[in-house]
Amino acid sequence: MGTARLPLERMDHGPAAGVVTMTLRQEGRPVVVLDSDLLRAIDATLDEVTDAKGFVLASDSRVFVAGANLQEIMGLSDQELDEYLRFGSRVYGRIAQMPWTTVAAINGAALGGGLEIAMHCDHLIAMSPGEKEYQVGLPEAGLKICPGWGGTNLLPARMDAGRAMEMTASGATMKVSDAAGAGLIEEMEPDHEALLCRARALAAVGKPKPRTEPIAITNPEHHAEAKAGLERVRSAIGGTASG
Image (cartoon, rainbow, N blue to C red; front, side, top):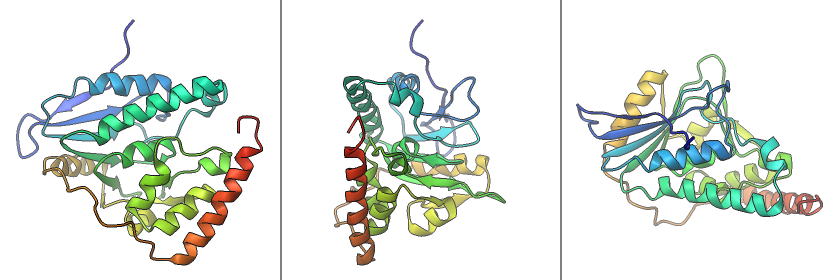
C-alpha cells in the first residue's frame, strides 16, 4: 500500500481560482498530531501541488496541530531521531520554498511542530476563539526538548524577538488573541468558513517580499531573560540521557 495523501482542493472560479488548499487530517485521531506517517503524507501530497496560484494549509480537526507524537519520538534512536528531524525539515522547507503565496489557516491550537509548519507559510491567520481561548507556541522546553524545525528562528522573526526568545526558552505558550496582539497572527476570522475564505483570498495575492530589515527587540529586558532561560534549557537537556 502506497503512502497516504491528504485532501487537496483547488478553487476553479472566482478571485481565488487556482488556489490549492491542503487539509491536515489523521483518520482515527480526534486531533492532528505530527508523526512520521503524517510527514510522509504531507510530502507525498505536496508532489501533487503543481501550477497553483496560491497555497493554503488548513486542518479539519478541532485543533490545527496539537504538536508532535512524543511517544514516537522517545522511542527513536539518536540516528533515527536525526533522520526524522532532517526529513521533517525538508518537508517543511518545501512549503517555505513554494513560488506562490502560502497561508496557514489556524483553526485551533497550534503547538510545537504545528506552529513551526504554520510559520513556514508567508501568512498566519486564525479563527477567533469564541468563548474558549486556544493556545499557540513552542512548549518543547517544558518537556526538556528543543524545537526541531526552525521555531527558534521563525518565532523571533514574526514578533518581538526578546519576548519570542523568552517564550521559547521557558516553553510558554500564549492565547491566540495575545498572539494576534503580538503580531504572530496577522488576522482573526469569526468562523472556519470565513477563515478559509480569507486564507484563499490572501493566497491569491502575489508573493510577499522577503524580510530584509533586522529583527527588532523592542523590550531589551526580554532579551537578557531569554538568554538566561536558554542556558537553563541547554543545561537541562545536556543532563538527559539523550543530550
